[in-house]
Image (cartoon, one colour):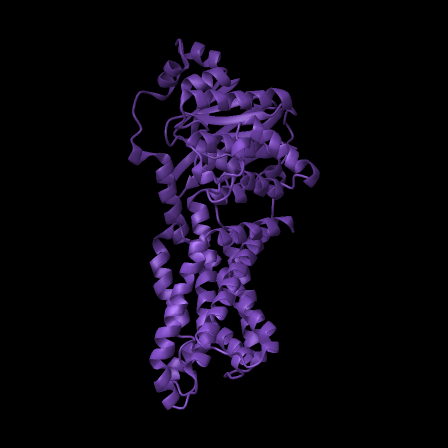
Length: 272
Length: 248
């Protein structure tokens, strides 16, 4: 436990930095997320959203700074942290050549969900995301929306205290987006589960998030409730607020930080 | 333990579901058996080498173990490309357990494929000298399977995508096969060639299999077992080392 950590904060990040050689993907950010809160991370392409999530979820080693997640440190106590969160990655992470049920069972065993409640919990969640009828079908026969729902169900399987969602609704139609958010909000209320998500959809953030952090060029440039952000920029919608804060310049795909970061990462790994 | 089991089970399930792959993977060994076996058979016999099919069969069995094992290990790249590796890597389980599960799964599949080819060799006239030695043969097949699955995992941990695949095929897997004494006897080789074959781990796997199936060989069962056992141990350590450093 940190010294000046408020016990109501489930995520505490201080002075976090991630560099890939000369490129600084995350530049000295600090923030807290309260227990039970729905927290949105907004930012243009390549702002450092996914890199931050990767560090919070033990997939990337920070260059410097400190993270506490549900009382554990992702660098020192990886397994302690891993037990406490569920995650839906930006890119699909299901095994297409296994059935929905097998994907769930694989997860349940890796997370040591006790045998006696395993099947019940899987059924409950598959029914919840309306995939129970398709449980014996190979995931490769699923649509994008169905895969997303399955990933959400899988992320919830081990009763995580925090659910990370990295652009969970990207490329989905409004109906499916709505659907997915209803499940998540439901569980957030029922189990006081904290939700940390990134998105490009302003309306989504405005509607769902309790608080929003706007990140650009690796720095947090604004943080507060959707109302705060609008007041601060004297705008009427979050979209306008977002543009007022991050500017109108389009981030070209070739300059996208994620690509750049991956290329850097590749180079860096090769040279080592 | 349950982690090792579920990773193993996943490999097994996926293998048995892809029947066309199993059958497809029998094509090459069959071709080699027929083309080499019957093509070189009479020359081999005239040169005093005896029945070439008897000599060749253990080599071809190990060839299919080698190929299947390396590719089971390299499977890891697909898991990474399709994102499934991340799901495994954020789970609260030790990297070593993941590595062991993956290795055992890949090795089981490769050993099974090797046994299928063994059955195939019986059809082209191969006859083991003593069925009581079969367990020893299976032991060698499984050890070689573990060895090359770990090698595949070690290589895959260092590769970002499938682009290095041809490289691995031409500069790793093929040389290991062709320079192992799978298709030619190890006696009377030029000095340089002898050194190379002695450095190839597959040489000892095939030699061990020849000892247990046709009762001939160069190094002796004990030597083969010690060499294969130690290289397997070393590769398991190397594979785990690289695997633990994957940042998904």
